Length: 490
Image (cartoon, rainbow, N blue to C red; front, side, top):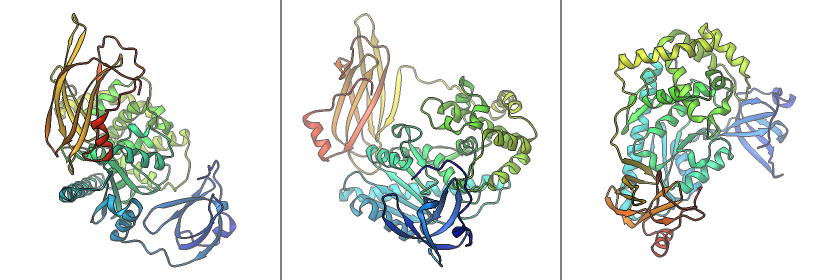
């Protein structure tokens, strides 16, 4: 899509027709070809138009690309089954499974064809995921009722795409984000206001922590709270989403409850102020400052919804009036915030810690629970590793051992587990096939192998990496001959 740098009024030919009518647009695509699109004009600004398609996706085009617009009665909204069929065509019938239960279309994108013995497991996983997202509907509806915000049922099917492999997810993520924001490897899931799709890794469907966060974004923009692509401040968008948490698939924390995770992030923050967070959305997109930004967003949202309920409702209704592709600057956001709440942001920042201390006592929250010493737990790439390490300083060796569990809900997996140290030394284990939910011992061994490009030497710290592939796949079979050597610094 071309870049748009300024807000422009619609051209005369477009302004002559009703903005909400579904019409046929003749468009000159960026590659020079012509196309006709049945769509509803959903918004305009910054030199761009938003065309809403039959499945609820947005197509963004520059105003100059629209050559003709004819009034029409379409597009007729696609049904849930039609959307599922279209997704199967897009990803390939052999690599796509779906479950339809309104308002959701739940899709599983496989990394390789599924053995017949695993088809039942795939169906069960999709049913489990659908059940969880239906619970999200109920939790969000309860919160909206509690704070007296009007919501409605979604107009379009809510699409959830679950990617079995990390490679496919990261490819889809890079294409969907254009490479902007957090690195694809650091994103566990995301909701797109353009496609209206929620995309997550299959590995996140064990606890559903990330899917819950992204599902709240999808709820916010599909149940009449805000308009997609409108300038809702990122701090509020992320603040409300961080307010919901789950434990093993059960949604047990809402926005008025204290999140130990985000409270700790907020208290540990040193670089960002609340003003930085409110005025600059980009702090949520970088790999370095995002942690502090999310902690602050949770903090401010928790404080407002807990202590300023009436003003909170007023502020949300004001944000709901914002139009797609509108732009707000930091000064506007500060002014709107003060108008709604009657105080400067700095006053709320000062009030937060005393309010949090009181809330911790009232809710009996433990921010720093005691953890077992000497044991690390890692969940990655459909594998869960519990590892213990002993550093024999006098002998100059690091001994590691542990247990691996296959967390894939659908098929047996091949695993390559490594322990990699800060000096570039590593130990490894290989399992050609480990069945669903089965465990395997990681026998004790010393960390003696050297990574590619590593300096080597004694080590004090390490990390566990889990790599996996569908058992019996071509790549997994290649591991039987030669395991990949980790690269230092990656």
